[in-house]
Length: 521
Image (tube, rainbow, N blue to C red):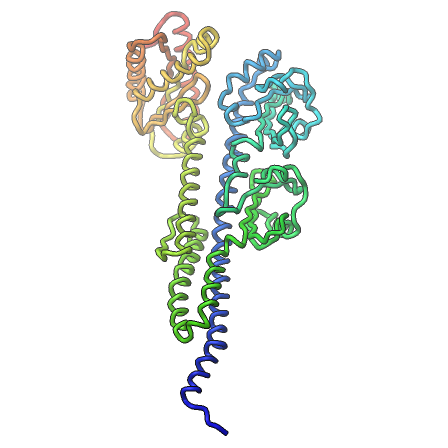
């Protein structure tokens, strides 16, 4: 029998290494890479969907809160005639910007009193068959409806926000409604244009599996979900964020993440095609398998370098994303691998930075008056409660009312009235300290909280306001500003509410003097 040479043995051994150990090592290593990368993608998508769901909840609450606040200002006079109701709605431009499909006043029997959309705002139209009317009348509580087809000519899917209106004796007498078009560029409609990666997308559906928003407009208001999504939806029905691989309606394998909103029983879902999500891993696998045969032993070394280069940044990305999720504090992930992992990290950072900016904008919108930029009533009342429980006293409250605003609105128009409000805001800003809370708490009412200021400091603030009024009226212009003022001081915790009421009474006494042609000192 012919002996096999050492050279042949080495050759055979190398061949065995190439065709056994190296493929096995490559298989194990690439499987590990795929699993870790998939976990990172799912964790990233869970974080993204959770943030967007929280943002949607905040915007729904802010929008509904604005409607409820407006409903509290409706009086019997506003409901007396369709004309009065229509004129009242025209005093709510901020609601018109929030509800792009119209703002409406309904009687308790569901008949329309007035609306801001002409084609469906004919008084007397019966909307009692609508779910939102029945629910609000039955419960006496605000409601956000399920999606339905609008009666307007565009026939778009819309939702309705409602707020009940009660008489002084507590009877429900009317409803204020705000409608949002799911196909317009509002915060719900624009969700259909948002992307996960290049081809991934978001969509909303209700508890009965009715599609609300979707990049494929033909799917909106369709009922029924793919079985895989239905299983994930069932797991996430308790409010948690659930993620897994499913098959969408087009037969495409996707990473699906679902989270239930807290404000309404809707589910936010994101589908990220696996082909795109795992593209970096698949490209790596092809390169490795093509290099095994020609590379030989060199491939072992290359694979070791490759795994060191790819796995460590990926593991770092995974750990950093987990750290963000566990702490709830956002920070940029630091990856400098120079490959697809860094691209994912950069995209993640960019997306999270945009979400962070939107959160800050939302906080600003929820605490500021849209017209004047001053604090709004909600922030003012929260500060009153906080300071009333504190220890830093005295605290003074100043109440301000713009004189003759209704006359200006009725004679010169609301645009001129808005200018008068802005003059008042400018005058107040010039009279208070930077640390004072200056707020617009009503249409023509303003208020300020002066922490650490006693009666003397409050009197000095009133004098500064009057000086600021004189300065505004000294400027060239066709408007003259007149403000009724009242101030009161609380010297101990628990007394700030009574100080607010005293300041309000004194402001109205000042207004009586102004109407009598007198000037308070």
